[in-house]
Image (cartoon, rainbow, N blue to C red; front, top):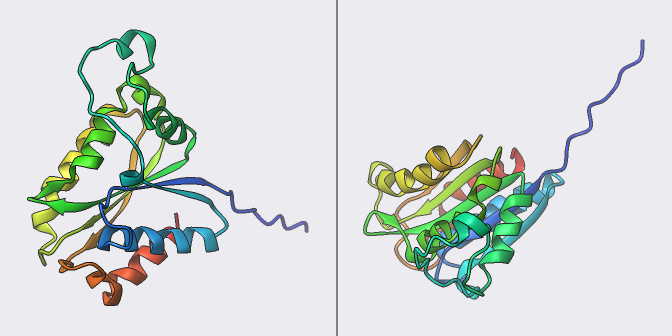
Length: 187
């Protein structure tokens, strides 16, 4: 009897970290997810959005015809990475019960190629001072509005709730660190 071992498929994972602070709480959780994903043999790239130049969408509509934005910044490169990824992790600190401006701007600027961001698995990482998961639901509604309502074949695979994290590094001693690692490992 011949036994064939199924080789695990290496996935291309793109982590979009919208923290203003490198080493901030949502960014730390990204790193834990990445650690697990790399140990599982996946190809992982993290884009620290705050290091990139991403201008606001002007709503001109030209990209609806050309599939290219008239703004010349780093967004075209990020969109290319999003299109090529198998899995996209979107991470944001929660500001006044919503995603921060960098993440919203990135989502708004996906218009030229959003129809190409199809059949992707998504993970969401949210970090806030609040202790309640329910107070993060508005942030997740924003992510779901983008992924579920706008992207073909998007599948929400997991959420990492970094609660009780006000000051930089507060999340480092939280049990959610292990959860982020395991989620990455099982991506």
